[in-house]
Image 1 (cartoon, rainbow, N blue to C red):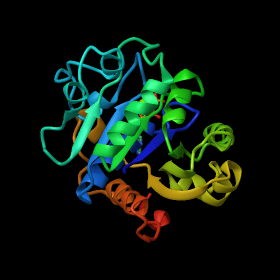
Image 2 (image 1 turned 90 degrees about the vertical axis):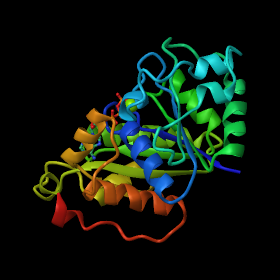
Image 3 (image 1 turned 90 degrees about the horizontal axis):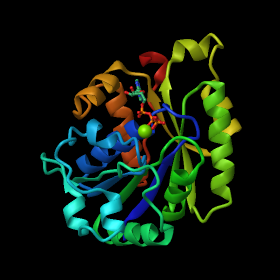
Length: 247
Ligand SMILES: Nc1ncnc2c1ncn2[C@@H]1O[C@H](COP(=O)(O)OP(=O)(O)OP(=O)(O)O)[C@@H](O)[C@H]1O
Ligand SMILES: [Mg+2]
């Protein structure tokens, strides 16, 4: 049985969709099968990050409302790596029946090793739908105080849910700004959010370029950090990158 993991944050723009796609790709390089579900109904982004826009015919709401089968809407990437996408609906309020969605995620977890739910920003209905269906969570924050405070709020909300394990991803780390005291350091962030750290991802222009082109990351520091995250998800013991040296 696979794991259903919500990737969430509170604050927008911290890198949830990036973490979802890069972690998904990294898990596939470890031989895992992964389906990414875009929960950002009305906005969507995973189809662009995966270079799949224009190839998707059906979406999550089509499955939930019986207009198509699961296999018609869950599409493999062309590279046949074991990565699949279930696109977000165009309409904002598409997931009406949360229990149906939860059952769909359970069904997908019988097929895939990982079901990754890319939550929309905020703590509204899209966040709640994703959290209800998930058994684990990754909370993404950046080292700025607003993002960290929002991450702490989300971590507190997750503690009230049936989530088995929530862990922290610190993204867009710029060591120079942390060292000169402009941004919070990793220990301060971990203490404020109150979750165990599972990944520290450097700010890396390669992430922006790859995302804009819908391509996998090239060999770069962020790619190493995402591969390490995937290995830790697989319970391998991997040290954190020495970020002071690289960003
Ligand atoms: N480690 C990183 N280094 C550099 N840029 C990054 C990194 N992670 C994400 N970004 C960039 O930050 C921007 C926002 O990322 P992304 O869309 O993944 O955030 P999000 O949290 O999903 O946003 P939203 O809340 O709108 O859904 C994108 O331009 C992305 O390329
Ligand atoms: Mg997003």
